Length: 178
Image 1 (cartoon, one colour):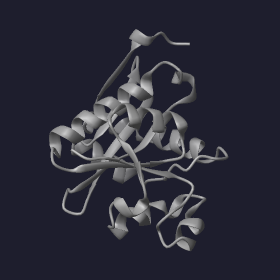
Image 2 (cartoon, rainbow, N blue to C red; image 1 turned 45 degrees about the horizontal axis):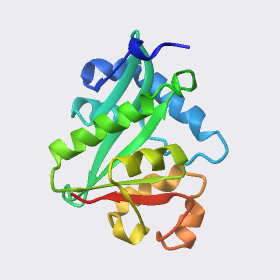
Image 3 (cartoon, rainbow, N blue to C red; image 1 turned 90 degrees about the vertical axis):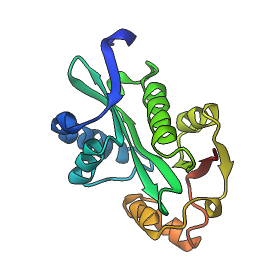
Image 4 (cartoon, helix red, strand yellow; image 1 turned 90 degrees about the horizontal axis):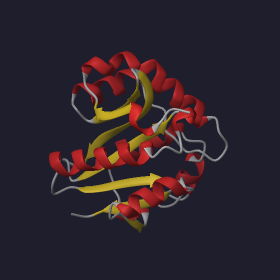
């Protein structure tokens, strides 16, 4: 196991695009684990996030270790931190917390008056969100932008979301209001 001091967590940029195959692979592998509700994104979508400075990457001696990105909705009134992933060999080192903290700081800097939201099934993500000041909310308090909810189509629980008219599903809605 790698020690805590041998990795960096930073804002991703165009120089990190070379890590997209590793990021995509990690997201895909996580999506296959029963109980996960991680959304698959197109590799070019992730590249755009990096070019825009709307992503965070964790590296361990130039090897991909973790990732997260930002998306904005409803004229930047709602911001989501999405796709938080840490490769299994780098878990239980506090890396996800550091990624989540930096992505949250970027959201607050770039979009100071926006509500930041998250939908998750992960108890660890819920705990991190609560520590940052998020509250559990109903889906009706989140963005109403259909493009956001279209992203849920790759989730295995999407039929349940449709059945509940986009108002409830397996994931928990969480919101930070500035």
